[in-house]
Image (cartoon, rainbow, N blue to C red; front, side, top):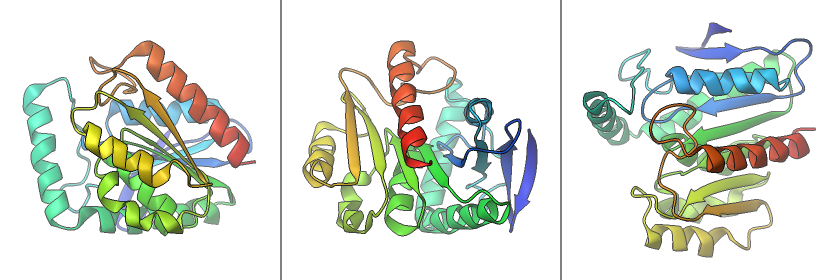
Length: 228
C-alpha cells in the first residue's frame, strides 16, 4: 500500500501479490480518500486487482479525509462539495480519472474498471460515458438523472446500485434513471428496497451489512466477467 503521484495529484494504491488480474479505480465520496476508501482499495488488492484511489479534491485542498459519522466533518464535506460543483468539479474529475486510466495502463495493466460511491457513483457513470474504461460500477450515484442525455455514449458495461430510500436521490430521480437506462444494452441496475444512501460504506453507521455484502458480491462478479 502506498501513495503515488499521477500528474498534479496523488493517489492511494494497493497492489496485489503477483501480477494483477486487472485494475480498479476506486472513486471517492465527498469525504475524500479516507480510511473507508483505502479499505476498499485494500479489499480489491486481496482479490488480485491493482487498486488506485485518486485524490479528486486536490484542487480545493489536497489530502482531504473526513468522517461522515462526525457531524462537523459531514457538514464540511457538504461545503466542499458545493465548492467542487461550482468549479465544474465533475468535468475536471473525469480528466483526472482519465489520466489515472492512462497511468495504470502505462504500468502494463490494460484492463481497467472503476467503482465509485455517492459523488463517485456519478463519476463512475460519467466515466462510462466519456472515457474508454472497460467497465464501471456506481453505488448510490447522485445527479445521474440530470445527465442521462450522455447515456448513448456508454460503450462498455456499467452497473448501478440504487437504494430506494436514498434521501439524496429521490423517487422521481430513480424513476428517471430506470426509464433512461433499463433498456440500455450495456447497463445493469440493481434496486435495494428500503435502504438509504451510503449503505455499502466500508465502515461507520451508514453501513447495512447484508445489503453491502450483496451489492459487493454483485460487483465482484461483474468485474470478474468484464475485466477478463
